[in-house]
Length: 349
Image 1 (cartoon, rainbow, N blue to C red):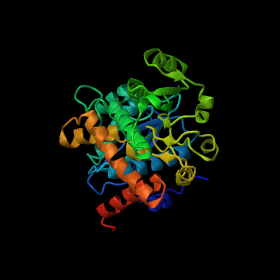
Image 2 (image 1 turned 135 degrees about the vertical axis):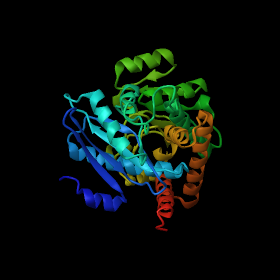
Image 3 (image 1 turned 90 degrees about the vertical axis):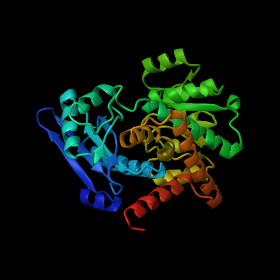
């Protein structure tokens, strides 16, 4: 059954969803603006091989709403949005991204966009040909986006260890890093530098071997990643990986990573809590690139990566402390706080 779009928008508090189509380039996709009560929305461009437009629309809605939560908890005076594109064999990539730039430009600053899965420097450069409301991948842009995210995840992971044990004690820690893209590699590098044992799973064999040759990580079969006994399981690839089946396989004490929307459903955060596994909410600890981009676009400054990590760790500590005091799942506490802030900004509370 397809998405009942207006019902979904009303249920989740969406402002606008735009269907995208460009005959000349084969562009098909959706742009969702969840919240712009504070003036504008931020969100990247995800290009993925969706099964159909229904799946793409669902992803657009889910990601846009998560961006609003991320912005709210990071204390940024912006809201959330997202662009998703259906990746197809006949898609004219440069032309499609230029068409995206035209669409973003017509919104006249109501929506700022940037990188996400499937959208890197080349694609962003094409968008930047048509609009300034995009993260420029060159020297004129904010730079170090993946480093900002990796630092936020690392400092969030460290804060979670201190929350549990009162110390980090890296040389006694084992961390499973799922995915060795830019964020996963950056996290692995930080962990190895501090003496932690890092087990890494990556489906791209060439990438896995390249990182293993550079860093002192132990490559494991991705089929076994959930079964590894470890202190921390760090998902840094795609979201939607913790569900009824994978949850039962986890042998960790903490879940903390850079992937978006790690939990398939909120109840899976509840089940982690029931099992005594501390979940550092993804929309708290993976906000580094967002913080760096927003402060650059709106205030014209490149916030130091370490300062961004410290900011994220501070927010996470507040969430974890409250969750412990109330004996509630951290994901529920974080979501409740984010939605409360958004409601206040909208004048609904």
